[in-house]
Image (cartoon, rainbow, N blue to C red; front, top):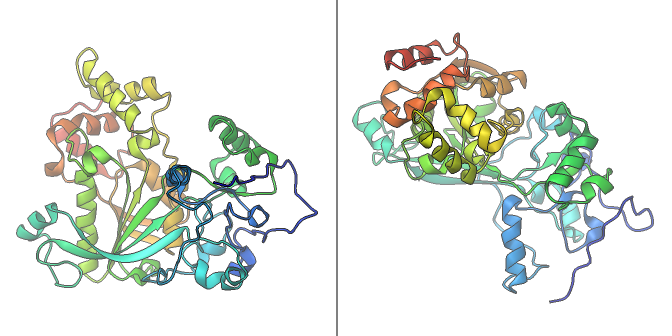
Length: 413
């Protein structure tokens, strides 16, 4: 295997060919410029990092084993989106979208001239159509909460959706501003806390875009995707952070899967009534602290004096992880802006952090929907009581969540 020469520089090489510039938030794709993370031609690179997020490491291992040609270029024939998203007004607002590339699904169309010249420009967003099947929806159909229409929802409980996978693409100056930190500090700490994995973070201030090796997100659209950007059309949405134990394997220690299923049900109901529904699924396992940390916290909670208690729920998390939550919901609304959303009529969430992040980004929220009490697993009441006691959501909105805990005989503090 021939070696690859990766050039580490502390300044711009003004003598060689210059890569296409990136002007974040420009009015058109050509003015904004492409995201080029190629490793085969360093002269073309205009970002820090590489594509595929956390999967980039698996790609590297495949190359090391000789299973993948390091210079292989994907054949993107017939990979165009099944539904065109945008452009939407937020795409040209530099501060509105800071953690993804709004043009990421349209690289073949937007940068065809550069592709024809040999530039290795790859999509960071893929949009496709699919069927999904959630077993609980059959119960909802049987109980009459969902009426199959044969188009969106089928009698067996499966649903037709449009879905999109999104890789993280960070514009560091805008992201730092969003998080209220100095860009130089953000760059330095990202460099230090990844063990120096990305030296260009501190040596190349001219490279403003970073493709971090973290998980992305998937969005699921119920109904017509075009209606998402129409404030006159009813929209239901849930923003859900990954919980593998509950979402996939049905662990009953938390309300994650029941809440996700409830959100899907509300989305289907709203879409069946002529509106649309949206699920945003973020890869932020264990409040973005990771599953190992999560399981350690489970052990600590259950083995403490008095057993698993609401008053120690978040304390035990902080004892293990040093922080209660690392999801940084301030970045979460970006995918909503990518879709052109300006109003959510039914927001299926009780989280004040999510509510504030969405509304302060300029998106109006009508009604907030709590999880129905009959969907809460018995062992998950500790989690719910802890969130009530910790002020996870306000007493004013949604008020029924406070009553929910009271009616179950759980202490609030």
